[in-house]
Length: 87
Image 1 (cartoon, helix red, strand yellow):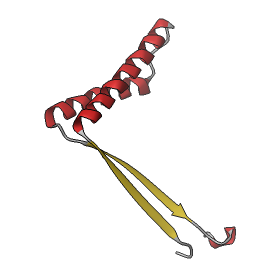
Image 2 (cartoon, rainbow, N blue to C red):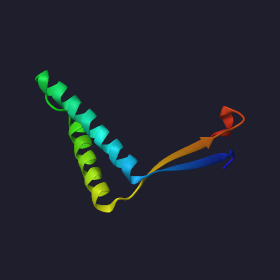
Image 3 (tube, one colour):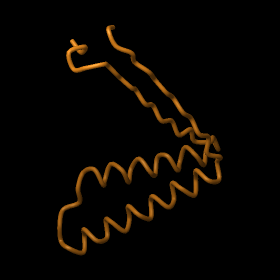
Image 4 (spheres, one colour):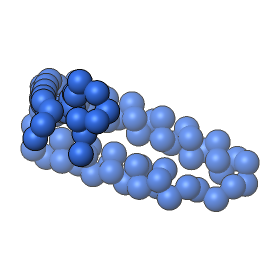
């Protein structure tokens, strides 16, 4: 390639107890959102239903396996001297 590309991968480990607490907090937030939506007589959005299901699956996995969570951030940087450098 005619221009530099940099990649940065950062990982942070979150221990089991902290992970489980965070998942349970997220479940409470999702439940509150669901109650607000039901109270306004609107249909439950699909993304909220999916998020709720994912939170319960994650809690189940955490309880059974007691593994830590690994929070990963990936940053890809692309740079060039000018706009003409890009193909």
